[in-house]
Length: 381
Length: 141
Image (cartoon, rainbow over all chains, first blue to last red; front, side, top):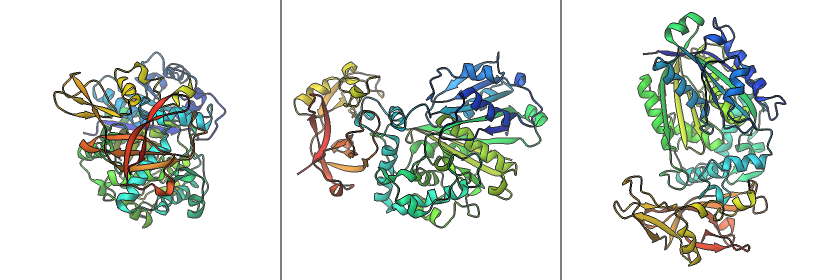
């Protein structure tokens, strides 16, 4: 049933400030995705831009498709907060499965350096219900901090255990030339960093960034002709959740559990079959919750899994070996594509220093908002 | 956009144009209210005037009263635009009777060291110096 493949992936370098236009930034990712393909821009059936449009450009799909030479094919914009990239992948998959297009380019872009950190905090805060939630000064760190507090209260998770996630991801970020932050951090540095929203400190949080990503998807007959190593989309799952106030749990994301269940069932695998994973670690607690929602650890046991290095390269389930959002930086619309690029490279055996030997099945988990939207994608070589 | 206005619980900027604006009048009377669908008896907080289950708009107002339990909280040290001067402030979710959950700010009268998950809190209207009104959690003593 492996009908749709990822044939090309690319990303720009992620940085705090790119100093170029969104079109120029996207080109960097597009060029890498097209590299080595026996395929031209004119062959691509449609394009989807994934973005929350922090830059001044509205309807970015127009100028972007023009710059990439993707006119007159149809082009669309997807906004799904930080989950836009994987929602773009899901949409492209459905387009191809329906028979509408043979191939689709999914472009992720965010340029956040035009706003100050406080302005971005306010804009991101408006991803909550503006009437009842953002109006109290709720921020993304504040919302995730409340999930961290709930996890600590229910399972005895400690701030040190949260910091362990950043220690790991920062260690691997030194091997990712496209990451914005590439310094290995010590536990003390993380624990001593400035409080942002208790119990989260600055180094428990990812940073706003500029960046672009690109994925080219194609149906089987096309994929086999244009690339030597197509990576198949084996399973997809997706879900949504209520806002912060009404949700059932603050220690787990119902949407991510639903997405994971669907993706595992469709791929016919379980968490134990995943050789390498990228999960949405916008905050240290987010990686802990992700590992539990995906079944890599039982509820409450992910802190121990990280502590025992079960999510390191040599562990049972390597997680975020590209440094994760925490170290790459988090250009909202580009993140989902960046995660999938890492998994595709792993399954192609092109992971370099972070290559998981013999990786055949990989997973990407992408969240929007504070567990408002979730996509889980399982890829297979 | 008017960030200053946005920063004051939006009573002016958002709820003014909501059908649930009666909440403000109740706050003026000292009450924090939720809505309940007359047909299926589902409670809604934040209050909404339409029931998605029944596709009906026959709602009644019910008071969120008594002691609730703090489910989780965070002390925010880095505030967004409009909240720079208000930090640090504590935000939390409290569960009341009938499973009604409320998200709000905690009164500045409660010291950070005294805040803990599971503690009893009540919700009450709060008038700010500039005559805007919203609600906050207070010690339930």
